[in-house]
Image (tube, rainbow over all chains, first blue to last red; front, side, top):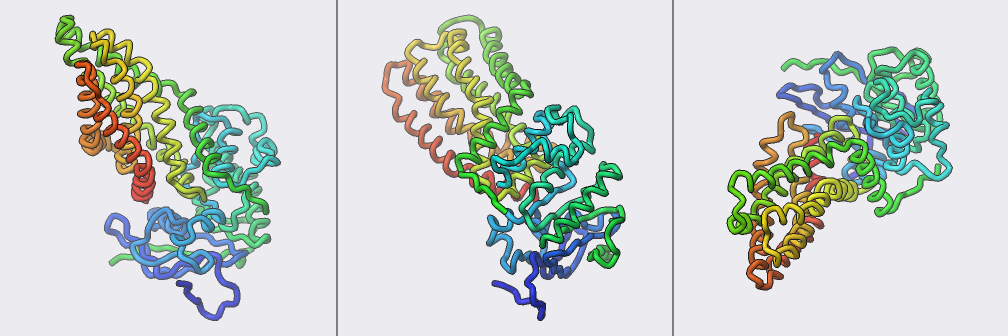
Length: 221
Length: 229
């Protein structure tokens, strides 16, 4: 059933109540409450192994929390799987790029799988946005780690999803690439989307007050 | 923003085409199980002796056991590489129902590994002096039986895909499930050799086929969710 959060007027895009996560008998976080609205950019912080990836996977519905629930538009994500997945773009730390397929084929498949491609989609133009011009037909196995990451990030340029959950999106991306991504995030939250990401880098082009932070620390029992 | 919703059929062919393209560019996946099948079957006459009567007696068993092991050998690739490079979690997060994607992957697996076995089986049957009357039964049991091997095997792979060395566990899980197919297939071929009708055994294999075709994709989808948890 919908949970009415405190007197906020706008209902949160994605929210979580009482999240508890236990991995390898270690308590990573406990009773975590999260509320993310349209227009938010949220940075999940914490040292290595503090549960950042686990939190993102739980929010995306890939992992089950030990306790607690995740809501999308005030509905349990397990009960609104199709709508939730249509509004969700999750990129984990694995790029999801097949080495046996070319950059164009990878991107075409990824877009079609998530239902965001139509006949007007210009794949080569999107690849140009992520600086992969000239590599369109190279097999991904011949490309570098950063270029793999770029192929998977290219989906962001064509995304119709509101919720972007990005696990370390800047890994292996050069400085200019990071800058371009930050611009893309800005445009996205301006359009009423939200971005949830983990990164050890500072988001340079954002005002520090603009960024919501969720800090995870080791909890020692 | 316009989103085109792909029909089930379009999603199915999208994934099927992708897996076939990958297999075509990574030919090991097609050649290895086939080569294994041929080698195992050709070793038997060498080990047992070329006596036609003995060979034709055990031919159905040899061909079927070899087909079973060849399938088992190839199962690992079904979800492993997708799991390792992150495309599996992207599939689970797509708005399309998981069972469609899974079914497409299993059918692709059968086209890559099961179908070549069927094509080469008559040739190996000649080598083993299989009774002339049994060829029809051999082909029919393989045609109905090898998809069952892919479908049931997929459940095992889905359960073990998250485990680093799941190979032995996979055979322990999957081989017992293959036994009914083996029993009824070889029995059908033996019955055909005697000139008797074998439609009963064939019907049971067909039942196994349709049962696993309709139920296995759901089981695989659920198992994959557990494995990626």
